[in-house]
Image 1 (spheres, one colour):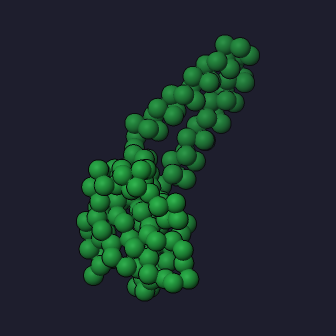
Image 2 (cartoon, rainbow, N blue to C red; image 1 turned 135 degrees about the vertical axis):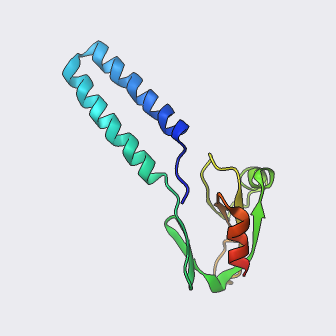
Length: 138
């Protein structure tokens, strides 16, 4: 499970709070309180929705909302921050499936061996990329 870091959520909340202050200065207390409550609910939703869950069952790999049967997976390669940076920008294949979070710099490239699928590989963010690659290869 990859969650948004505290510093990012704090920064977003600071931006929301600056909006609350602007509403307070322009309109008054009650609208500012409503804006603050809505902002607090939004930051909780952002924290929950930005979480990336990776699951490997006996038959499939789930990365966020996507899933694929393990029999269609090829070689999984652990990527350091340099390799991951290149594969999600300059060297990215437009047909590939990318599921990453910008605050995590390492990941795994999983080749897809399905003749019916145009996707050459999945690029997945992972905190423990070496362990994930070993699990997928083993």
